[in-house]
Image (cartoon, rainbow, N blue to C red; front, side, top):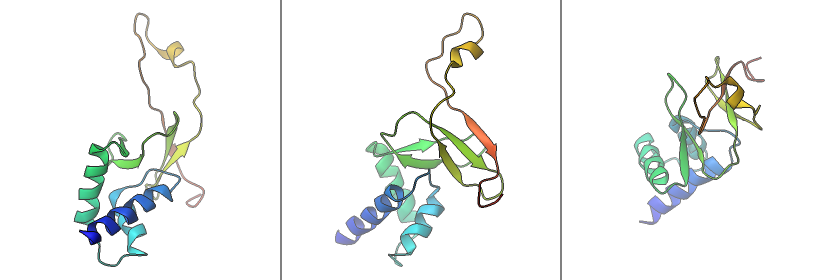
Length: 122
């Protein structure tokens, strides 16, 4: 049992130490720096459990595999790098989304994705 707790803690630390949503492979890469005995199946199982516990939330990007981030962040949007595939948080919101809404419709939520190249891919 202790190993699972250690692995789960390492997975949580990977998310806590990141300032952006992570794909399961990115979590594995981060954890492997400290625990060489973890596999991708363990990462997936733990992500599933942490989503069920609402500690993590999925970031669903159209046409892409899910990424995950720690629940409880303030409202924000995301930037997707077309070269490396990393996803980054964008602080703030442009607001006035209702102005874009067709007449007679009501907005109850929204998500905005920007696409381009991150600073590393330039």
